[in-house]
Picture 1: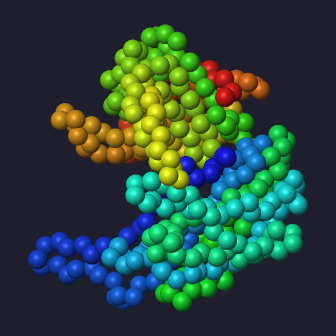
Picture 2: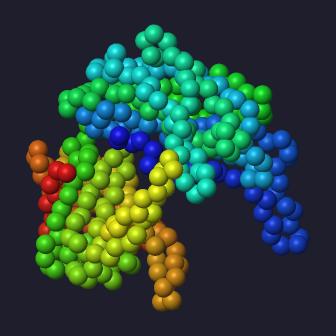
Picture 3: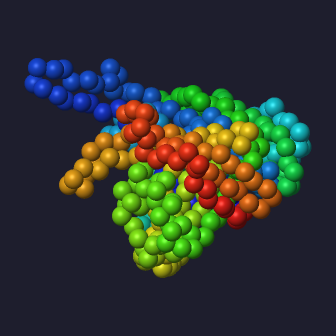
Length: 343
């Protein structure tokens, strides 16, 4: 299931008391009974036209770390609105799920919800988990989508009328907007790096952004390179020859597999009219091998694609925070191209 929970890595923003020099005052909340907030993890998102489902995450944010989450049932109303094109009559909630860790094993559990006859309105019930005794830190609402190759359109879902006996608020954002990804490079593409020369070209472009990549040799990789373009975010994933044992436990079943390690380079991107710009951050490593700083980069490239092929041609990568002409991280007037196949 696309965008379904693989693991819940919850970013819980905390308000901490900072203590500096003796002659400064501690910064502390004015009210010990600071309210919890439930918010959407993102305000907008999207997937490929053939996506059959999509998960929207809600989570707790902005609470004091020494307080427990609510231990009484919460209810939350939802309304699906602004359906366009193929989304009309096709969007509804499939299920609502969360994860809990019990004895080092991850269990996926479902929340109950009621829904209207047309599936567009209803109420979500969020009780305390039977093992933890508290409501889940986050949960995902999985929406059914049309799933056709030529799907067009979008929709919004709004959350309201939060009911709880706890000191709890529905924060912002509380409206999520979904739209089909209509840019030409969305999706997953794969490239086989077949020669040492090919790998040296890849390192020439991206080595300045990743010290680990810069130190790799052709023998250190399998040759598989994946480019994954999602909603405004993408990543290059390089598969390494080195393997590791990965043990997972889900729903009481433990499994150990041998997997190749991976190296990732992540960025936001904007693609339009055969041009694509990447923005991300890279670490500056000092002579002792320690992270000295983290700086932003901008990469400029062109793209060409047909049904099965995506060619990315990179011309420049600059350090956005510390740039002077002639000091590009990468620069090639003719460009260096990589030809990916649709995965």
